[in-house]
Length: 392
View 1 (spheres, rainbow, N blue to C red):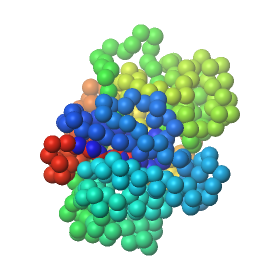
View 2: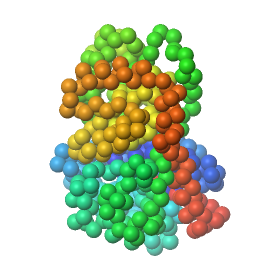
View 3: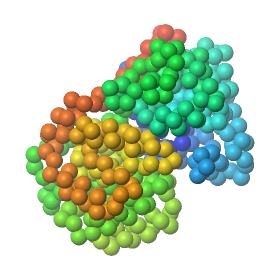
View 4: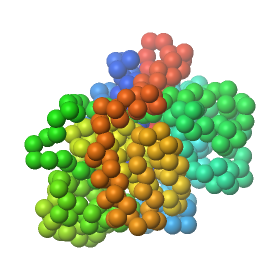
């Protein structure tokens, strides 16, 4: 049962697809999954059995909204052409039963069109995976509308999997998806990386509470980490900061010096971050999809300071969760250090068992299993005796 995935750019896309890949293999131990991605950090993550990685040339987002080669001295057109050729070649040789595409319906600037054409020739099924929130509706319409993507999705994809809940955010309504696309759309619930750590919430750990701060991949998290260092200097709790591997090395070193000078623990990367959330008493984080869903799975009291540029996706999701009493939001344009301190003082007093009950009442957190079941069902319809997937 071969299965193939293509991811976007960030580390969050990789984590999400690895969570789904692990569930695919759990359901079909004979399944084979190939993950196509460009994240350098994928080698530092634990790969499930029967899963391997096809590394693509890296690209980076530019301030104007476009993309450029991260290392290769070539134009953006050329690096995307190379990436598209690699993926199309993988489709032709690996011949997946299912091709699961993450977020970008046709890749960055159409880089996946050749691969999708190749998939059609070989009779494979195409699945599009979407986060619950892409951006505010006007921004999505401006990006998708001129390209006719909503209509193209329904003509190209056999299934659209939304990694969220319709009662929290409904992208079908928000982004005016046509009825044909809505008919093949399934809401899976939220996808998160499985945790192995457990903790009894009634007894605080020895030495007082622990506050964990993380900024995802870290490409734009230096201001938040600086604010957390300011807020937590001299505070009556232990502070652990995870800067992420994708930011500026010089900024990271400066932050490390300040944090360690204040007696805080500073890490660049933690491969078992979901387990560290379980052990923490409070979390300060940006609002990336994976970070927030992992925080909800850990039932850790969370202060979310979402990114608002170039997209408002994180703010929209964070406010929807705050409205249900699941976390606290600090707007990044507020008086951030003071607001973070007030929010931390609040959430450190939350009853964690009560928070877990609210989360269970409001959220469906088995999105990886549901998405995997959809993928396996499509693959088995192609080849009942095997399962091969390309994902990303």
